[in-house]
Amino acid sequence: MNKKKWIFVLGIIGAIFLTIVIFKNYFSHSRKHHEYNVQHLHPKVQSAMEQLIRKAQRKGISIRITEGFRSFDQQDQLYSQGRKKPGPIVTNAKGGQSYHNYGLAIDFALYDEKTHQLSWDIKKDGNKNGISDWQEVVYEAKKLGFSWGGDWEQFKDYPHLEMTFGQSIDELQEMLN
Ligand SMILES: [Zn+2]
Image (cartoon, rainbow, N blue to C red; front, side):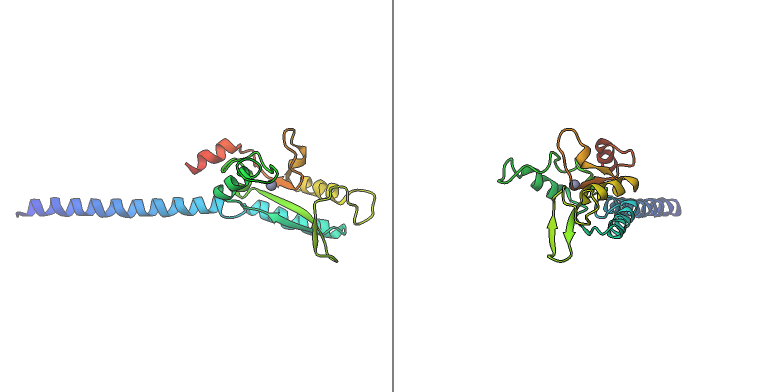
């Protein structure tokens, strides 16, 4: 082979190598991005959740977060409850249709420190101040920027709190594609 051919071959090998490096970087980056979106609670949601627990505690109300991030598969399982599977219907959202699937929603329940029992009694007034504990927690949650599932017209989801940051479910789904 003459010199010109060698340079050509080396050029091709170099180009292939560069393409592999760029692709590898691109994919590892998008995988990280994907994980960031769906594996964890959004940092702002996480921080608001921690503040909510503290604020409720200051009012004499203990709460527990019963659900945060939910995978698409887990969401599909939940959707089939009361439809293909026994039990009551608890959601109208299939995999990818809930803000839980993007780390943007949490569910809470009241917690009794003495009996160690969770409670979903929205009328309970454990701190005896004339306002239901549930209502007080929701009030604080809204001040922190959460929207409440109890305000939904179609399907009231009282334990549910979410932050949408102005993103519709369609927009979030598009971001993953
Ligand atoms: Zn929820």
